[in-house]
Length: 400
Ligand SMILES: [Zn+2]
Ligand SMILES: [Zn+2]
Image 1 (cartoon, helix red, strand yellow):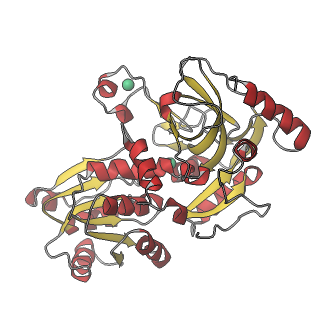
Image 2 (cartoon, helix red, strand yellow; image 1 turned 120 degrees about the vertical axis):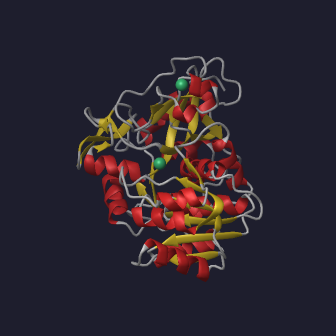
Image 3 (cartoon, rainbow, N blue to C red; image 1 turned 30 degrees about the horizontal axis):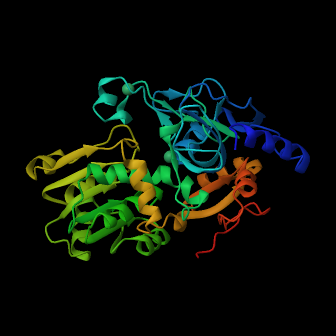
């Protein structure tokens, strides 16, 4: 099929079949806190020979998207101009640049939403997540992926195996975050791992740690239903966080989970001060602690425990080389069941309601379908995207 033919087909199909639906490139835009709008943006064009044009099928809502929606800023990143939200997306290739060999129109891909400069010392050292010139979706001033079409370098579009759905594809981004955290923690076969927080990233860290060979994986949260989900997904033990001191929580956790003098690895995916403090008391002598969660910028920290136990402490930020590939592999081979995290799917036109739902809590991961969700259906009939969004505002996903 000649490049470009699919997009023409799509546009004409949209015009004839669903005149009330998105005409071209409907986008969900944040103007300022709690002020959003839907607007048509020009369809982006392939400018480089290695570029790929992708129709976005599904986008997961992330805590950071909700934070921008509520506050208009995260740290130094401030929304000053209207910005398209969203960065956890999967879509269908509709056109490719002349140098692209590994992708073709019709391929289903997970989108890695940040592009580094490829030239700086961090990029060249294989730490492109630390690139100072990173262009990252839905991080001001850059637009995000809650839009009709998205142009990306082909090596930041990862082809999904046939047994991975586009909805699962939208979960690859948070799974890649978890893969990076667990890599930073150097989890080895036989390790004992405690994960603070059972939100999407904490749950996925538990699952990745298990797939890396951890024999004991303890999920910690204050919400019992999240701990139940952690058990379903990967956790061998759970601990419901109490309103006690950090040391009391640590002692109770170690006793309840038979962790003896401490866990080999503690991962914080909560960003909560009390959990971070507890984590430093839970990690064993000579163990490893990784900070994945982001909460308050400054907290008090049991630095004496850190020193006396000679703990190795690492940060973790986004994802780097190989993390997306491994995340897809873990879903494809059944090691991580990301479907269990999907609480519901909202239609694109209900995006604002979806954000409200995430803010209320009680959900793990909400996906927004479209605005070009139908593109896959028309192009890849038979591939088996079995879970289609319904007209209901939220369609519950059944476990297969
Ligand atoms: Zn995210
Ligand atoms: Zn760079």
